[in-house]
Image 1 (cartoon, rainbow, N blue to C red):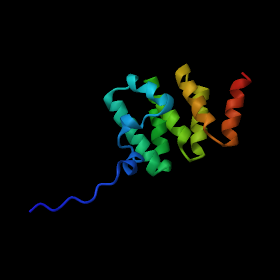
Image 2: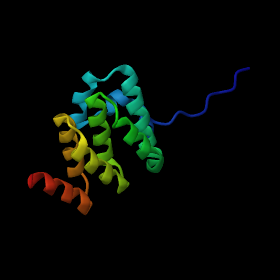
Image 3: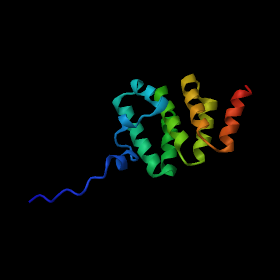
Length: 131
């Protein structure tokens, strides 16, 4: 006899853990989907799930993905970091803003920094205005 399957959590409970990635894109992030392979979407889905569960563990992985050649991966990672709770995310965003050469990625970093409340995020945005 096959044992019964346990209760399945409601869709809303699953959404916070990276399930339904295609439906999870929001705001300007949707524009990146057309530039990503299926494998790249899976990797970003895994990063979002890890960010939701353990930001300390996820931040080094986010930094690694920021080294990818595909600008859309880098931009999507930065937008995720705009929603992260860790103050270390601001440092990563600021570094990306200062070092990435792709204007689309820089715009994503600016959008992400604008979502942050930390003084360092405001300072990074102010520095852009002074250039």
